[in-house]
Image (cartoon, rainbow, N blue to C red):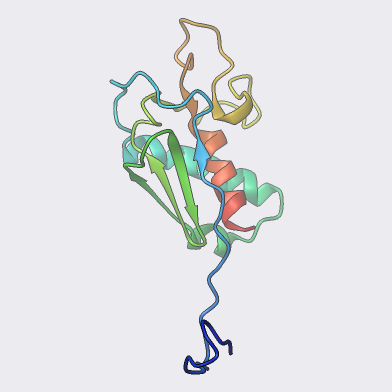
Length: 146
């Protein structure tokens, strides 16, 4: 219970829902990208999520917990590429204008991963200048579990 305002205000009591802490959002390090990138599809997302789940499972993560987190494609504002809530992850459709690098066949710790989800590949490769979907997905899952 708490008293807010002047001493003449009414005393308010009750069971208050505790607001969970805000979980970190993931931003593109370079801000909003140039745009024109194709939107991520469920067909592109699915194998990357399977790879991420397999990687977390190999590290001892709880399978029920993995499957309880909903991952969806949406439209996020500005430089946001991922938004994590306690039981839901939203990935920006075009990775804040940079586009997604999608390769579910590479090893999880492959050479494509650089800091902040940006690809480390040289210009001209399929990964150049794009956000790495596996890195952002893994970070989002880790964030959702606290």
